[in-house]
Image (cartoon, rainbow, N blue to C red; front, side):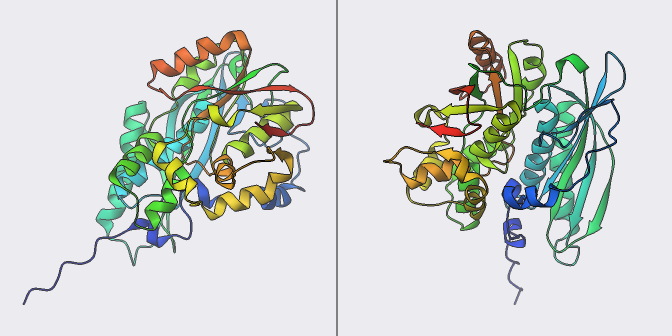
Length: 351
């Protein structure tokens, strides 16, 4: 009698978290970094850790600056190739969020070699390679280790003109907020891990997490764009608070204007959320004001950890139409204005 075929490998069962949902909680990260030295920084370092921005930026000369970032995480999906694609797209997004043009990448690979077949690992790496090929950059090296959980990601390097760097702390009063991608990836990942995600839900999740934020390069050319970041593990509310704190402004967000993945909305209304969503709220919920008749599922969407999420930017009201047009050129059909900024309390108010 032939032995039965082995059960298919589900990558998400190898990890306690997944995607950007496995980031260290905001409050814990703040405590870890609270006493990190910021003294003695070279004048050429245009962006460091001071504003919790997406990448470091180092000025080379009057016309060039290097954008440097790294991002890696445990599996958010079961398919190895898709996992590699999502992780690479997510890592390169940090370069786009600074207004930079990617130039090369280095691979970060940690795999449980005694539990994962070499071919599965190869498929993960191949997924990342396919994204870099689409971007037009090489994976020029990297580092690999034997780990308990699968880990994959990239060091991504880019270039940008020093005058076109888009920080997350340059927003101005009366700016409007624009979000490029729909929310809900974390919720869909939680449903997937339970084995309950439909084919439609998976398609929505994969489309969102593998769409490259290339629009960031052209947005850097628009003078009316004052601040930019991408929404990842701390959720929309968390990354918007970083803009507010860095720019010393308050934000108002219209919940009904938020783009949300349809299947994620359905599950959110049934009470599904990730553990990271709760950790996010514990870390910054005191700085978010909600209406009196608020539904809990809406809070879960505000704090939902996004993996390879959309660009979030602050721009002059008269620039918003041009910003949306640039997003549309790249197929971001859900991009829209979601709120505004004003002088005030460095809080987020949801209406």
